[in-house]
Image 1 (cartoon, helix red, strand yellow):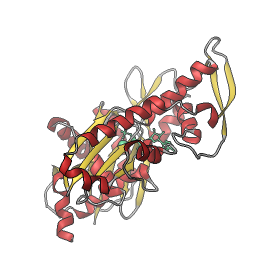
Image 2: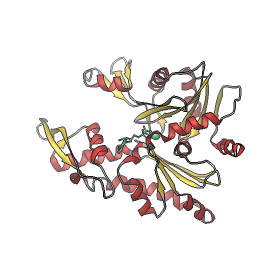
Image 3: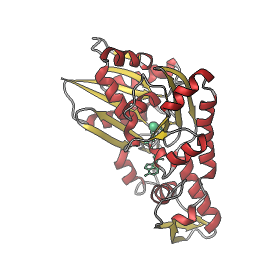
Image 4: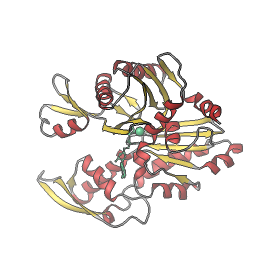
Length: 340
Ligand SMILES: Nc1ncnc2c1ncn2[C@@H]1O[C@H](COP(=O)(O)OP(=O)(O)OP(=O)(O)O)[C@@H](O)[C@H]1O
Ligand SMILES: [Mg+2]
């Protein structure tokens, strides 16, 4: 039996989707020994051991802004995750890649997958996969916006053809940094990025209507370094996301500006499909729709859309009887035409 998976290597998370077995997600992080560079653990275990071993080891994220930084660490994380999922005799993988990956980088990605025990692999543009994972069709005329933790990828499709792609270095982590900076400036308290992220996820909003709430956090006083406990309310962080929100909206506005006049009506009718964990901050869909004057829809599980779309695409790729190693983004629409 062939197990057909979708694999999304993100800055924050690595997500595997199997249309039969469901979604498996792990943090894209490894704990490595500072001196020997040996990998001690990956994923959740790395985070758990990170504090305990902080004198001799450090946490490393091997992908950023859609690109791979460290082959060895990437391979360890992929091998670990692939080892965790139940599979049949053969594994066929479709991996999500940014639109502007050069051929040499694409080959490197395929080499890593092959060396991780995946013999047959294909690549697809991540924002196209996100559209399909969110229930859209590659034959649509639509704008797909995938907001990750480190990057936002956008594709514009017109009658099933990709007419524009972009990747901007703005994502959920920029919203975390805004929270961290605000607490540092207002209260003179340093908090870690992971605490700032938790505050954003629980209290953050870019539009009205989120219920008021509070979280208790721990940080250190900037002046003395003494640890301090404090309470933050949603009211406290109203307005802190202005800068990253502006950059994100500008990235989408720039894509809209590039749409040729004769395609505008159809693409606006299709609207924006908004996905990625970074898009889950409360109210982003409404804010984007109001500011850009276009309808925005978001699936209920936007953080899984890329991986889900990749596994759906995998289930449609015909058996080719070879080792794959192809980017199939441009031919996905033909799989759908054949089915119709
Ligand atoms: N409920 C939530 N509210 C706000 N943000 C959230 C929520 N849940 C997750 N996030 C954010 O989603 C981001 C992770 O999303 P995702 O897994 O799509 O990123 P990634 O694919 O790893 O990153 P990239 O695509 O940039 O490589 C983090 O910034 C996280 O804080
Ligand atoms: Mg992503």
